Each structure stands twice: as C-alpha cells, then as structure tokens.
Length: 120
Length: 130
Length: 98
Image (tube, rainbow over all chains, first blue to last red; front, side, top):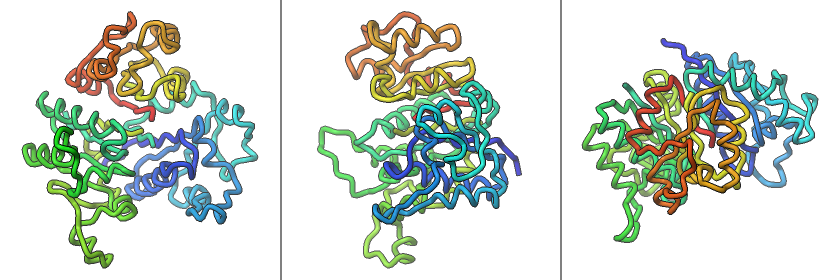
C-alpha cells in the first residue's frame, strides 16, 4: 500500500466543540492504514493535551487517555507550537503525553513536508 | 487530476457545504476527477433526505444527490458521525433497531477508512469546514 | 502549499496563525476570510506585510456576496471557483486553516 504523510492539524480546544475527539478517530484509522501520521497542535489546539481532564461534571466522554494510547498505534510524532503553549501559560509539564515542542516556523516546515493535511 | 473533498459542517448554518459544492462543480467542469466526497462531523447532515428548505432557497441535499447522479460521484458519510447525529440507512436502521431511515440518494454510509483511502488515492484533498 | 483561510481576521486567529506558521506559498481567502482583503481594514495591513512571502488570492463570488468586491485591496488577485480549482492543482498540497 502507498504510504503517505498525513498530518492532523489541531487548532481547537476540546469539549467546546467535537473536533478534537473526532480528529483523534481519524488519527487512529490513519494509523491502522499504516500511514505516516503526525499531529500538530497550535493555537487553542494545545489545550487538547492539557492533562487532568475531569469530565464527570459535564457528562461528556473524556478522551485524554486516547492521546496516551497513540504510542501503541505507532503514532509518536506529536508536534506542539511553543508560542501557543507560552501564550496560554502552559509548559511541557502540563501536557498529558510527551511531545516535541517547536517554533511556529519549524511547525510550518513540517506542514510543508506533508502529502495530506487534515484540519479539524 | 484526482481530487478528494472533505466536508466537516452541515448545510445552511455554515457556508462550508455551499463552498464545497461550487468547488466540486468547478473541479468537474475542468475535466478533473472527484475520487470521493467524504462527509464528517456535522457534515453528515448534508445527507438527510428529510431536508425541506423554503421554495426560494437552494436544496443543498438534493443538489448533492443530483451532482452525484450526473457524475457518478462516490459520496460517503462517516458511520460514527452519522450514528451520533441520526443519519440512518436501511442497514444501520436494522442494526441499531431504528424505525426509520433518512439517507438521501447518492450517499452511502461507511467508515473513516474511506477518508484515509481518499487521502491516499487522490492527488489533492481539500477540506471545507468551520 | 496553498493555504485556505475562511475566517474574518477580526473574529478568529486563523489568518494570523497561517501568516506566522506557513512556509512561502499562496493564500486563498474564501467565505468570511475575504474580509481580510478589503481596503482600510485591519486585515489589509497584515496581508500587505506578508505579500513578499505569499501570493494572495481571494474568491470573487464570496466578495461579491458580501458587497465588498469593489473594496478589494491592491495585491490580491480575485478568482472564481475555476481559479480555485487551478490553484489547488498548482500547489502540491493545501491546508484549510479552519
């Protein structure tokens, strides 16, 4: 099978809209198709990775665990924009999974290398 | 050239499906091929045949069905997104014990693998959303 | 890469994120994104500053629908849906900054 470079670009916060959750579902399927998958988190998308989601009060499905499970699907390229983190008072210690933190310009370079970019 | 189109928003609220429709028509008019149109998130609401807009408004759902018929388009609605939002074909109705179906002609319900396959097979993938 | 922006720059940060992150290429403004390309708006200055890095396009039908086609700033090329298709074909990839 052809292997293409797929990048899921996450720029939206979780729970307020469904995009983060449904984007994760695409990631898992792309991994099942053995594609070269990476995830980019910038702007409010970095909030998706903030650890400690407690969704009992809002009665919505929590999906923080899924980010931790990505490694089992060989999805290990998680890129996070440094500026977006800093602008939200977050550091790598606040995130629920290990990620590669980089500048916006470097993230842009990674985007340029992709075959397919899916934004949710 | 082979195009794939991803639509992430429902009709009428967002312009996304209107833009996607105009884009799809232009792709075909230019002699390109549309490998697949995939409906995800609220985009699955483009596929309900129960849509009844006022007479002086466009019928977005019928417009998709007609385009699909004229050009033999493969229009796929994500099954998980469709189940969440109540878009049902006969197979889904039987499987989930529902008493009605509402999938418009020209659409089919299938998995997210169809989106990834479109990304692999098409030369270009264009996303329309919010 | 072709970057597609569909949000007003005064409502959301999509255009700014695109301008700050994307490698040199093209930007196509569609839907509410076209407001960025109007003379005298806050978007105009940002686009002018980025004009060396990106080829700038806006979807004419979306500008017309919003009554701003006659306010299009210099340096932005207005195209129709056929031109949209040509742009997508011309660049290896495209990204919608949703």
